[in-house]
Length: 226
Image 1 (cartoon, one colour):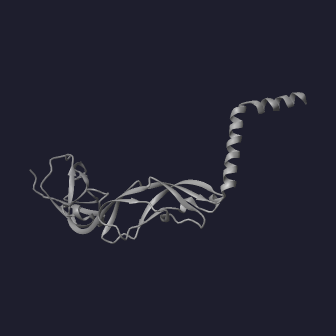
Image 2: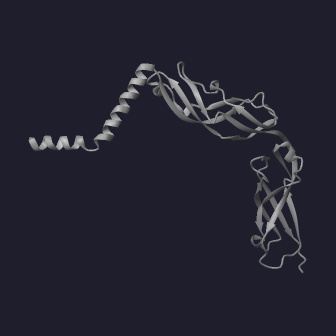
Image 3: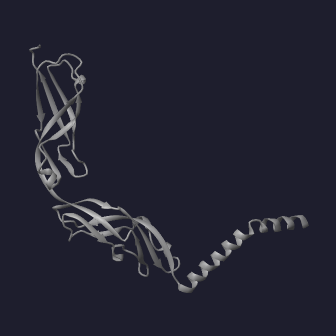
């Protein structure tokens, strides 16, 4: 019995300063919460923009996640579902260009008695694009070298045009949409060969291809060879 008691005493005295410090901090935290009646919680939440006018598009929010500190009654962690929370921004008054927007505590929907006391960072930088649509020609793209000398060919693209949407300023300079590269070595000796190829946006973050997503390239080989 004496040996067991000595073992318990030895374990308790091991790292005693650290254990005493942990005990003091725990008591201080308990006292602070019991005295103030408040609890604090820090979460990282995504940023969501809603109700943008149809002619505008959010290009980028910097940052796209924000650290939020909440204050509420003890046990508030059981009242909220962090995976359902977001920093919600109303985009109805937004204009094209870059916007520096201070964050409002009201942008996070929380249960009664819980509120936001701090955002980090306290503001966001938003890039808003003027949105437009237009049709542009589809141009097949060929790369590499043929296996043999290639006879004259005629190329038919169907459909000939693609409907694209995106930054109105960039769309005004867009002359065509390319297909994914077609390797010349994949062309065979048949008189007619049909290939389905995906279209490629020149800038996926600012230009979207609405329709079609793929084009059919029909290659007709001339009977005359050189």
